[in-house]
Image (cartoon, rainbow, N blue to C red; front, side, top):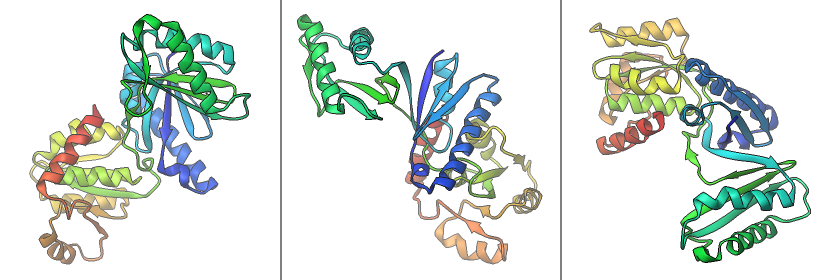
Length: 296
């Protein structure tokens, strides 16, 4: 069964109890993505990484890279940590990746106690590849290689991979409270996304072009998100109603700087968030393009 190595960033810096809570939330959210897609997977973890086993590697990558907290994901080949076995497997694994006159770099990392250092392993494996195919005129380039070959030794298991697919980063959904976001255009959609990235569960009130932005993109990051399509009703009333129903701790609005004083007066004691208040339209469009790419 194909294995995906999943990395996470900011949450690894938290205290042990908080980190454990965030890791559990991350695992639940990954499983939630597979459940919504009606696919099965198996999860396991070690210190700092998660491993997702799924029959469908391509779809698995697409689902995992939508999960907040994930910084990157790689399809990996998993083998036992035995030096001669690593030497043997690196040759057959790298064969289709290294064409004539390719430049390459071995990026080796270790966790645990072994009879070799990371640098020694990289030199050993790089030399073996050069000796294996002298006719290909391969070269080692540690600065700007055409091909990077990653060898990650983690205690008794070793993982080989050549690609990293970027995830959204941030914190797992559900670790930072609940908010309701008004999405009536791209600015509102980007603001809602930024709150999700900080760990908030976001319920959406969609109006106008927001219907496609929520239904076609934002909901992919949280298949369980509550969505209220306003269908022409007064959107402020719809936001207030959904905020009360979901016990939201604040409201996310697509405001410009000059609009904030009036909004602050109109919303009274309600906590307001306006993550895109300082963004130009060009910045909003650029952020949204990145978001749609992640959504797949």
